[in-house]
Length: 182
Image 1: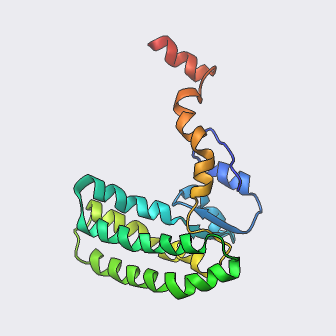
Image 2: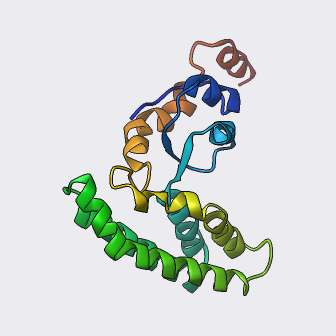
């Protein structure tokens, strides 16, 4: 795991950091990585980010569609719990046996549901996030060494992410200007 702090979310920071590296990158849909994918980096989608879209939809309006998606995605995470202490090869086998059928049914279900929901709705946006990224979201199934999500990294950087609004600009010119206005 690697974390590189940048003062903004400009794509140039990701491009500069990754440089000529060419491997598998587990990430959300951050546009700053797109150039790397065009240059040979393999995009592995983060299932937790896809799950979060449905979680937020369910919290907002108790959507039964979101609940069904969460249940299916939960099945994928259950396979990962079972595979936690396995070798990469055994994890791959378990994923092929148990997770691939769940993912295939989930994908078919999402396609069917998407045809039924209005364009631009919150439900359509949650479905579209996963459907547009489906290949990347399911690449982990083909490699037992690749995680289903990037939660391990996000948990490591949480203190910085939560604290950035409190101290990111402490002592900076920007902080001083903000302080003089208050």
